[in-house]
Image (cartoon, rainbow, N blue to C red; front, side):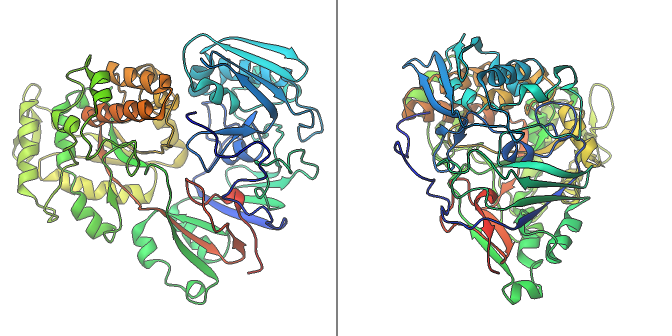
Length: 566
């Protein structure tokens, strides 16, 4: 995306893999929830993500060791100009779908047109920027862009390629337990709806010796089991029913692993540092609802969340507080005054950024950790009062209508419910009646996708090269489009302009300034209660599986693991 690729022409493998990893065995993984589809490319239904990466390939592969660089996969060559006004790909003549049919330029064009018309909102948005797509040879295709967007060549490079002869376009948007036919290293061989999916290695997989694949996809089969909740999933891990656990609960990490398998070394626990921005975890206000249109109300709700108390009493003090949407990276605006380029970008939007955010002195509200911080309560009640809400008889009441302030927070797991209950108690001091609704995984996802909530928890994962997906997360057009990640309904001309600036940046310095400027706009919009993140990855694994010693920027990746002697 910016600068030069890390790997030279003729490289043999990524640095974060073991190129000599043995092949064979089975890796079993556990997931919470369920699934009602195996098509991850449509809005309808809930599909597991592993279909995309193990079964369906793209023209190029994204390097795990760089901010945003792509190397050849289905495509053996790529061409673009200095302006990046077009991109052309030539396919590897060896590329085959798992049924043996060759991957052709017609398959690529078919996939592009199908996803642009019927795919997820991000596909429709990205591919809608293409003015012309044309097959220029049996294995050659060219995309000419209708807008200036320097990320588009990489976005098209990562487009999933489906088999034209195996897809019915008329039924594509319907959920199905039939997995798509792909060209990847695995294919689905057993499906128990909502419970289990087993993938098996394609025995004559065409791309096994490509540099982007060497050292990856080492198991002969992959099994994914789904559990009704986190506790059931954890108990299954302790019994050895699956092999790797990426822990997210600090209480469980601190106290839950005092078991014989850990003490005698059969289970290995590791804390792994990553080089990525930390995930932004938050309770999101739905600004489409009248109750949260006033920023003073939202700020009051933020003031009342006592992170210091929750971290110490619920999470053993192991979490760190979210603040920036790109925490822990050079892209974060926290603690940094805006530079000249940022100020230039934001000149047209004088009210979009709070002064303390612009100067780099802002931080999320801090309490005394008592759970009864009177200063935070006083500040919240002042904000509520300014917005027309008064505390009467222990209930926060609308001055205009007399109705109580009683938003609903929709959660999908017991862990989310536990945090919600703590927050409910914090809000009660201000007369806020927070209603908590725990729903099953399918209903939770459905309500998220249709924005059917007052508040909802969510975690945005960011890369070191945020791009077009920022429009999907924070763009005004996404606010009214079901299935995006603009869960709060943000419509900000300033955010839209900063996203345009980061997409247009040619140099890394300009790009970083644009992202920091976007970060300042998002922080100032105050559409969420910033929560917390773990310092790195908490990983527990049964010793029978092993991982590379060197980790990727995003941490250790399961596709690079292998069957050990353990």
